[in-house]
Amino acid sequence: MRVRVVAFATLGDLIGRNKVVELEEGATLGDLIEKLIREIGPHLREAIFSDDGSLHPFLKILVNGRDIEFLEGLGTRLSDGDEVAIVPPAGGG
Image (cartoon, helix red, strand yellow):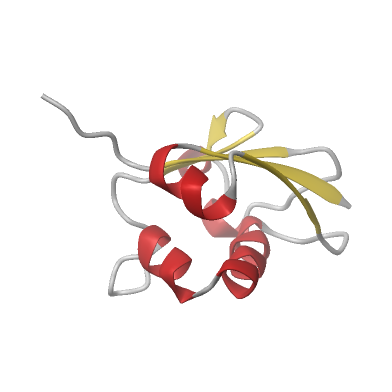
């Protein structure tokens, strides 16, 4: 199946702003992230996960516009044609 990944800001620089990823049927969001880390490198893991292995607290990941906090987190099952948006924290002042 094919899933579209849209990444913003610094993560867009690492992953690409708009990337299509091939996954096995029944894959989860965690599977997608692990595949991206294998393709891109360990610096992506550092950008997504905290030292304790949890997602960075201010990172937002949406599947088809829905925050994964309200789905199954990294266990959220993906389907062909889904869109995953990865949004790092924004700074400013």
